[in-house]
Image (cartoon, rainbow, N blue to C red; front, side, top):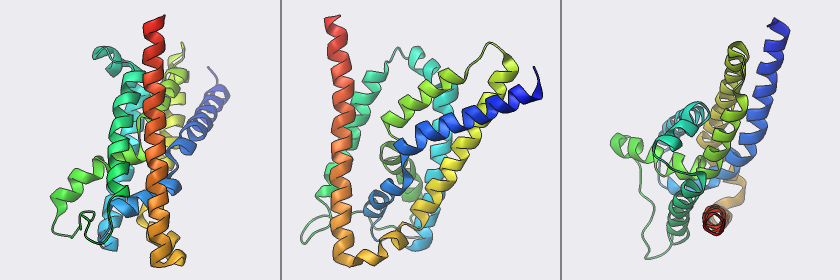
Length: 225
């Protein structure tokens, strides 16, 4: 196979993965949610969290593309089941955010440089999964990974490299969106930021319900077939 065809496959897979995953992951839209869940954290702690989340996003999406379909087959799981479970988790976290931050209410955990074990624990759940990289993006990653497979080994490798580059670009974008999320909202002021965070939590709740509904609907239709 010629170098031109391999380069073409690499470029196509790069654009495919970027176009398929970036609108779903949407780091800019998740940044306010990240702020809400890390209330009280120092800027350098948030940057450290952002690095961990970006790394986790890259690992999750690469895993979904490369071995996601095999893992589901091994555990005899279907994508609708993943959507139902992930939707429930997303709903629970969004509901907690909606009912946090207020007089006499429990606030989000306060981070500090000494609570590194807390940072590592929360960097994956819930900050990476399901807030940043949820069931929808994982299912799309699995679908894209299947589409990148080819009967030609060299073309499959080129497609995989292109997809990996796209995922790394998404990871870098996620880091900068989260690490400097407070600067994106500084012009809103304290009251405006609080309102924006509540609206973001409500949108996250609706997304969780939508993911759950899609999975549940697919399961119900499967029972009728």
